[in-house]
Length: 140
Length: 176
Image (cartoon, rainbow over all chains, first blue to last red; front, side, top):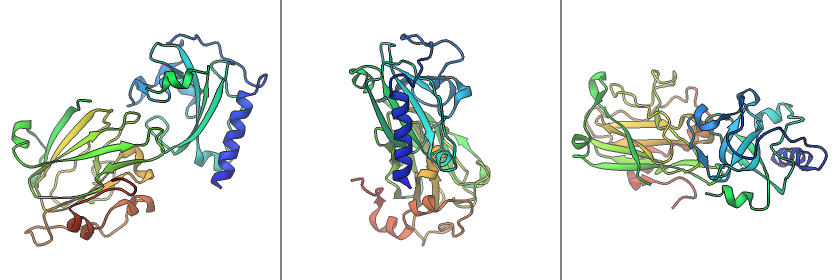
């Protein structure tokens, strides 16, 4: 089952990353993005900067999947992140036509997360990096 | 990273929660329980997960997980309507969310078994058990025997009282 879920999530990521299939949102490269986006650390008990993800902004109406916009410490957009609860995927929920912060997607990481305030259920992080150096800019 | 002390809570008999000064609390033994996780949040845990202490010991919970927030919350009906898994007469405690670097202290005075969990991560097995004193102590109250509403993964996370008393401290699987 886990392999099937991973494959499904990976498929979502590939669709999002494929040229022509994803549509960039009208979000600025520099933080903060305009409302309805809000800083995640202002919404829930999480640090301002999350190593690996950056300073996150999200439209609360789009929870849990997002998109979450991840900005580096200089306030530059570095990643779009989706958080898809495993239980919901197992139950048949699909997350379609999700927007991305930028069409410039250099790589995608997908991994399991046990949960955190805001997205409490165990879920997959689907991280679309915007630029070859984006992962390094979000590392710490 | 310098922890921020959030609160000092005395937990004893009489059902009274008392906020007391750090100098008083720190006069007795102090033991640290770390809240930790992998860098991407795949796994989270308390370390140690099981600890034996003497009555009058202050526990200091410290969040050393740079990418997550955690709580140290005891099982008690007054806290989120959970089953009681601390000695009767002990005052329940909840640290609330601790951000990275934050800490919370609680003084345990009644002998017995105290089970606690992390509010957002109980489902991931982030639970712990403190044994205060030994079964021979006056007023000793052992571990809860009913599962209540706890999940199997949470129940599996508690080391046995015997293992804790034998080793003094029990680390979570895979942690040195």
